[in-house]
Image 1 (cartoon, rainbow, N blue to C red):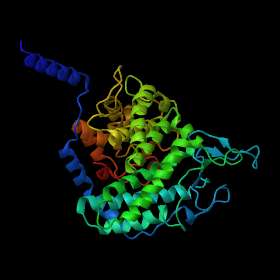
Image 2: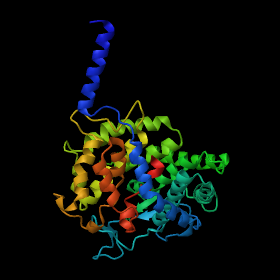
Image 3: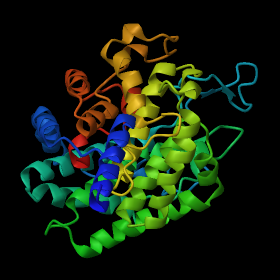
Image 4: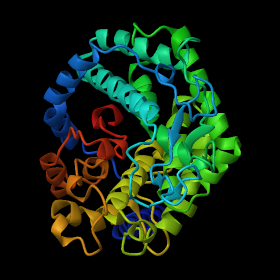
Length: 395
């Protein structure tokens, strides 16, 4: 056998072994991407028409007397914390999974609205190339990030506060998952003629400052080390903002953290998430965490380091996670664990893990499940836990 023949045999054998283990790098299914865009096109144009009529509403539009910050500081309160019936003036007490409707949520709602507007305008620009969508998106982007009168400070010092206990917590960092589609929208629109270089630099500077805060402040480090979906969402956010700002060091860090910490420690060998199943909303949290892990793969995968095809030595992988949960999305009645204490009837919707997983692995069953679900949910709790609502800008 010649040396060349031997090398060819070794290559083919290695390829077969990789294929058998699911490690062959996968490329997006362009046909399914086109089909998904067609499914969403009418909704995108309708949503963008709405967005063109909207004026900016930033954190400076609403102020809470309970905030320890300035009018430019994002403020929110812990969702599951309530007044103590035994001491109405004392520190709040926890009721896990039970949302207190009296908490201050105006800043969170404003950020979700901002994300919805930019996501819709960027999606419409991507499918039409009409720069009117870029021009209007800039009105909102500048209001949030560069206008001194209305901008949000690039930190989250006062998020998820608890009356009588904390003025802010690292756990509050999860609130800015709704800036991810803003960052991605900027990436989609940044080369348009209507996007001035100075504005782009100012917006990227804001995200660069926020990224530094996320990765150096104690709150950020606490969130990074969270063992459940909070740790996942820290990596997901940092990845999105690092890609926008070309921070290769943090992109590399996030890839390694996904492999060695998130996938290795959060996913069980069967593809489930035990830490989420233990919660009072096991179904919703499982969907949420899988969405976040899927987006990490979508954001961070490269030809040389493809997280879609990565698996641990004992076989844990994003594909296994999607394969585990998809049947319970297709038929929720098969869910083998307890029902969520709130919002059980409102899940699932068109989960991101279904469409991105379908595109990556050419899984028509997953695509058809996604296609049949609600692509424009209105329930506030669902929207809060569904930061990726515009798949087209991520393709």
